[in-house]
Length: 183
Image (cartoon, rainbow, N blue to C red; front, side):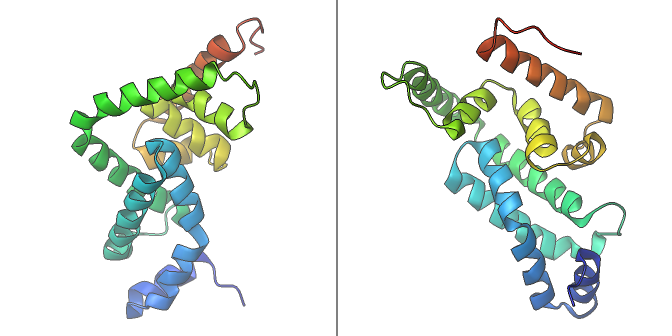
């Protein structure tokens, strides 16, 4: 029988059952890693932060009270770890931004004219502010509601909705300038 996330959490908390927690990691690691990779724009950094997030989740597992979905609680931990890593890297951020701008410029002027959908998506997400990118990826790539995305990021629901709206507007203006916005 397939145990629910909540049942696995209960087993992991009651007996410090590492196998139960391991199953939770297996279920959600792809989602957490993919999101953090999108936020960091760096696979290795995203994976490192994901590892830290799972360690933190193991340490704080007893604080999951069952309100909301386990995955939203886990994504909140991952986002907090991302923010902490982001703050630590602020000094290096200017150098990274310059390199990203160079790469983005080379993608825009790709002489072959053949870019992958993933490249297009990365370019689109690359123009967004960190908060806009975080909420949009949670909502569209991970199927979370605005409420869940807001809980993960710690921002009010209205702010999360505003970030999604602004992000979509930025993408439309930059990549689809001739298209009219439909309500």
